[in-house]
Length: 519
Image (cartoon, rainbow, N blue to C red; front, side, top):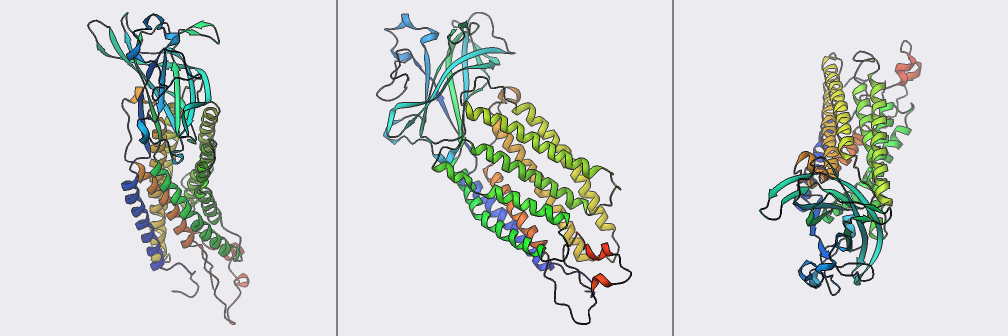
């Protein structure tokens, strides 16, 4: 190696770091796929019709206080009317003394309503049918399963899209209606939940007649979705393991950069920002939900994830930018992409926070016109545009490295090519992670548009991507940590006094290696 060549990480350390990182990600991927193959679990409960007077304001479908249901209505047929017919749902269903309630590790609960209508006078519109529900939500503890505590009660307005199923000889025509989100809880602090629901003909709060164009309700189902406890346990375990590791490596990186005689470069600053964003995301705050009711945790996660995505995209932009000649590919490309990253991340954060804050305040929302479909398609388009642009820049950077002259060392160029390719792969997998998570959040609401949309066996992939973010950032911090300046011999010249070399060139070492140059 020439005497004036910059010191670099050896090829052995470089290859070993990436190899160990890759093996770690693969091990987490395989283990998570075996333990937690899917991040979601669901329970479907068929509503029990209740006609008698409630007990303490509630209808129960199971246990010693179960209501008078459809099998016992021979004595009260004359009193049956939509305005005194309730549908009750207990989740989890109480099946003897072995019933196990929800775990606080499951974090969230979505209740999705599905109606089966029997219509014998004409046809329902396939386009839109307004329906009004009177709903009441409560919870029960294992100490007393028959004394529900009220969480919320409200009238709910929904738009149904019903499709023809089959025609009966005597009864009429059966219609299957689109799923409707009726319950959203961002903290499962209690073991059992109870929903009482009525489809009234008279709305008491506005004194209006509603639900007049519906036939007889044949069946009512609610599917309850919640996070799988094994998935959340593995996620918190990864957070707990990587949190001190990333902090330690980031501290060493910051200390090494601070010992240099020059200010930190842009790439060093953006890499440190990426590590800070990952550290914040690694902080296992979800443990608080095990001891306290914390529905606001989903808003914290919105902020953490969007901060990390924006930091990752910014770092990738600067990583490709250092190999491209300014203004050669596109004069204002870097500025435009930076603005797009900030505005796009802010838009995603605002949309998610608004929806989550509204549902957090109103578990039984009056209206639920989900923005998931339209906004998610817009976000997917934005992500596709950025991925296309960054792919072009990555290819241009690789071509630029290949065209450099023989003075550019082979080992150095190989490391740069490897870092660029690995970064592109990591970002492509991160984009897939973003898409899958949004599809998970909206798959039960998009049923009418896309048909039966089920996404399964993605738990291992999502946890593997999370591990990949940590491994990738840690390896970059190790590889790009500036080496300590070796002691100079007495006969060595001061680099700031070398004649004929511009001051800027002497004080700004190459972005590529981020190492202290010696003369």
